[in-house]
Amino acid sequence: MLKKFIKRFLPSPHKIREQKILSIFGTLLHDPNLWHLNRRSASGAFAVGLFFAFWPVPFQMWLAAAVAIPFRVNLPLSVATVWISNPFTMPPIFYSAYIVGTTIMGTPRKDFSFELSWNWVLQSIETIGPAFLVGCLIYSIFFSVAGYFGLNYLWRLSVAKAWKQRIQRRYPKV
Image 1 (cartoon, rainbow, N blue to C red):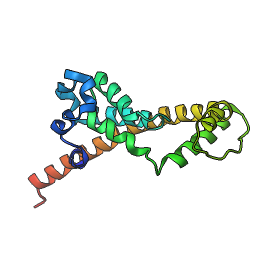
Image 2: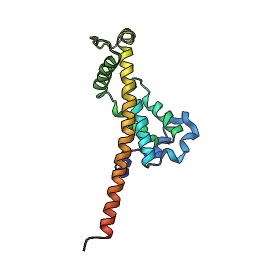
Image 3: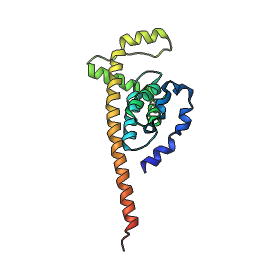
Image 4: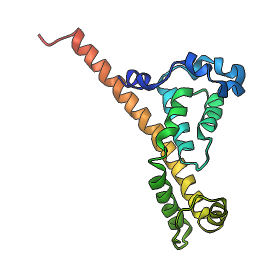
């Protein structure tokens, strides 16, 4: 079942509550709905995590946690889903977001080379920044909606399959 598969990869609520960095949320972390895993909380958490996964900011997990709490979706799943964009996947994701942004905005693609300097960041914000941010916003919205409905559909299929197997075990063909 999909629930068992997801639970294998999630840390325990006790382990997460012990993290000092999450102490900024205080007693909000004691809401049992943040730790319960059902179709609604899993789909919502997946959507929240995917939404922030495509943002080019260094604190995506905090943002996902801050949004998961008021929406009362599964906190560990929303934070874990953010890691779809990781140091290995960020270059292709962000480059394709830039291409989508230039296509939507109708601007020509500009050649650029990466430099690890503050000057390069400031220059890039002016030149490729708008198209890049538009592409990231489009990716965030598209993949969070697709992730929500996709996981919701997979969850329903998993439950239907489990019911079908249960009925077959109870009433085997004679």
